[in-house]
Figure 1 (cartoon, helix red, strand yellow):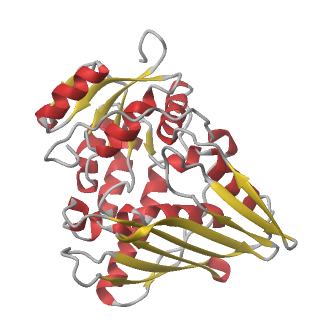
Figure 2 (figure 1 turned 90 degrees about the vertical axis):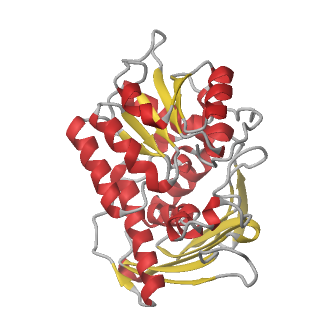
Length: 368
């Protein structure tokens, strides 16, 4: 049950940057959500964050105690990818709703187990695709579906940033690298824009000379979709920050940039070229994390299934797994055809003002 004010009570699992710098301040922007607990493996974070937000803190080893406490209705899981199942599955089995960071998990097996737990208990599971609630993204997807640029045939994207070699993502292999960290953004975008699922995956990767990392830091992916549609995207941990995509139909195109990021000064924008004329569409800066949390809490309070559910999360992870196979074998990978999904809906858009980012509580554990 929600609290006395009718708000869904959340526990934050994992006290890394994304929790501290985005989710935790974003919750305060909502009308229907509140934090009541924190789960972390770092005692410094446990003390300082619990004091800052008035939370009760738990160690990772005390997670089961939290689930039985009656203090929460939902959890936001933002641990490293390989630990997602460890917390999402028991929470769901306990009847606790789960907002789970993307990618959903580090294997298809884990995704399927998490989804099975949600079906078994009836607790709601949403993958934290924040852009599914961002007004500019929702507008673009809606316009493509209405046929504004005609029959969509081609998608291309580049998404890059310079990541320090000391970052754990540069030292933990494929499932922490750019393909799985940044790749879900263009991958999920094209799946929704095409309203279709890829049937073939090809990938190549490079490792920048002189960079002390143990994973390819730049990955290029080509996806073949039904009806001979093509998509390609490149993600990198070693190039100056940029984010853009282009989707082309037989009547025009949309070119979006910024298109994946969030935070101060980052409002999603796109240029629509139709009949030889280009018009720019800029959207205001909004709080992505507050927006997705408010949407999920609405789903809980009104007993509605969230759109970016566990099936949506698994569909991205199965493509990421095919990318890994393509890189290891050098061969294109076939994927079984899947039926289309309803995808992003117009009523998911939320326009909450951006929260002020608090000072970061430093730690030796990047996602503790």
